Length: 334
Image (tube, rainbow, N blue to C red; front, side, top):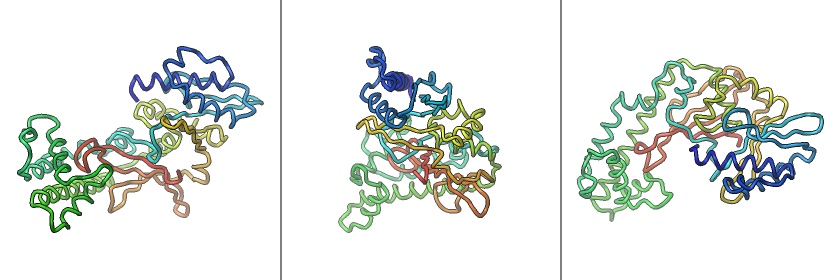
């Protein structure tokens, strides 16, 4: 989260606390934050906690667990993590090297370094260079975005529509008897890059499979993701010290994750205690399949193995193998 976004988010959280307490909203917070989202979130908190005695902001940025704390009769506290999201589906979109950065694998090479070591960038460039019909403005390899621009041109040749899978479109072109030779060549190269990317991921998974794992780090990562800590900064702030406290809050049913849609103002609530109900935290590890481009965090004894997270190794832009490698994290029960 950038500095600007963190500013309006924190202002909106503070404004939510004021509104939930039926206090006069601060004009500066209204100007800096999103009063519409604050009102929607405050309404939901008022409905969910009719016996509340106070709602307070937990502090700046990542200083504490949760963003808001609801105090209720009898002195009990419930910690709320507030997330302002553009859409649902993916629980977290993290950097490509997150699993090695946080030492879920203690002696493994980072994904970015692994690709360099096996020559993936050079192999990808060689495939892109097989296409002869690039326009003059993308023939130069000396600038940083040359790979992206060439991949974009191949997509344009294939006429990939918005939201369409590039590989599926390439297959359509190859099956079309009326496709031109230029279109067929673009489709062949796209499919070759997709296959190169898949082979590289499978090779990396072979590497991860041989590495030592740190079960506590895997368990910490899983808990933090389920509880709403979805950025590297948030993970880093809580990673070394807060697992036991999070588990205590979950055991006491004292933690909630509130997601507010930034476009519609719709508020949804998840109770991590319910998501993780029945989990036995034993032999927690990252499970790596023999075939596929996703891994899973699993836990529990042999007779009660449970999947906590699915983690897909992914490229966000253009198509797989081209731009912005990342990890998409999903909660199966969500």
